[in-house]
Image (cartoon, rainbow, N blue to C red):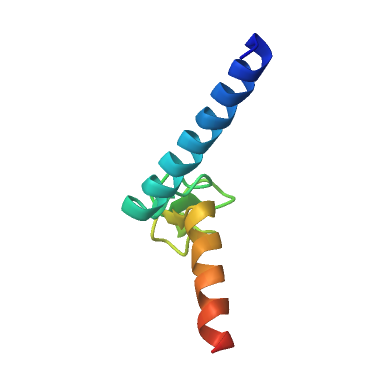
Length: 82
């Protein structure tokens, strides 16, 4: 086995491990903190005096992770195809 093959195999295994780790994280923790309101669910009004609910997360402070959104979309598509 030459060194280039070892490097390629290592990179492929590392990519598989990262992908499986992210899939596991999306399964355990499907939500992340909303980036717009930093997970508080509130945003300051334009005047800066009052608070309003964050429009991106609907005031919950949580957003669905991209991997979980893709999984839900594929699952719903498969379910609707039956």
